[in-house]
Length: 155
Image (tube, rainbow, N blue to C red; front, side, top):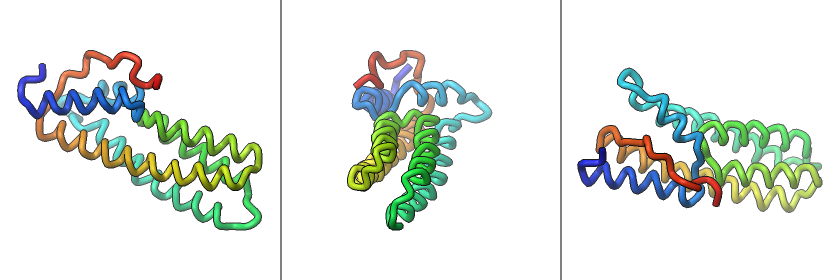
């Protein structure tokens, strides 16, 4: 179980990620796929997400600069971004993507612009938090994740 102070800190940080709604059960599922042969599987998946999602953010930003706005194209990009976010359990980010897509459906340019700023903000915040978490896990060694957080992604 959590023996060292670093392991206790990693467990606490993980718990906070769930309680604050940053991540959902999908992260737990990724962590459960880790084994001795691939102990950093979840971190590798998250790293790939950030590599790919950064390109998508650029595409969305460029599409938002064009006039008139192509809401169908924006919705397609954000649909892809939302799917990628869901695959790593990025709960708050996924929620912002949903809101953006609703604004696309209403052809609301101002709503899209405002929400895109929140998407970028949530993307950056989660990246920093997950980088810190995974760094801590690497330093602490394996942590017990058998106890799933209660009501973590419901907030």
